[in-house]
Image (cartoon, helix red, strand yellow):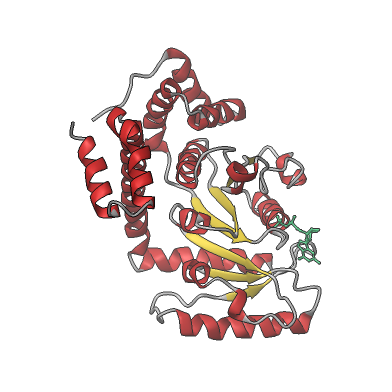
Length: 329
Ligand code: GDP
């Protein structure tokens, strides 16, 4: 099973990525993000060449509401990691960009220090498409960054909708950044996100030490109630001050502990395999829906079916069966 043949100009892209050239890396990601069918074919041929050289990085997901301090945190952590000899790529999944036309995470002025470093690569979220499509392109960009020798990939997302699930599905460890709001109980915190978290971090701990202590202990008991106790990993609740660069060492050490624990318990490879299969199925679903919507008979019949279901003159089951049947004709 192979994809399209590699064009000569794309062979140069592959060589450029493997030689760690930023221009080739950026151009390859642009090709991946293009929605043109011929670009998609070329992108697949390039990716096929790069796949054997990917997979070696530490993939870190980071989520939190706008203003929690994600970019300050990622910049501080990224600079520390570069000082330790790592190469750090930062990617983003921001479904809001397709809704609002402006991206919460795509602002070029974010992470200015990190952006200037040769050992760092920062790429904003693909600017259009549904979440499934955006996440898919970020996943592929992640593989290209790995092939370009980045050994740490941070995938950032805003705390809205389903984007956390998508990011935790493409990373090894998932960090949730929280704010220690005074008087905030845990009602407001989305249960779904905490179920995904491997590490919870309260940022802005410098503002009110007492509030952050209280928030941490409330969070620990909430996690204890929410999540089945795993013999392999108890979700740590940490505190940082990204602006003062405090607490970041412990965050990194905890990420390494998590990784070690996954490897020791045989969970690491299993998680990556599970993620690859889930990715394939997600693409099949996207592809099937596209085929369905583009089918001439479906196109001709869909409006009437919607009208009749809305008017309750036909059941949704019958309408769905009829429209799916159109695919066979
Ligand atoms: P993002 O929207 O999640 O990326 O948040 P930013 O990193 O842009 O931070 C939002 C604001 O919070 C900025 O003004 C930061 O300087 C500030 N900030 C970030 N981290 C901290 C922190 O640890 N302590 C304090 N006091 N302010 C912080």
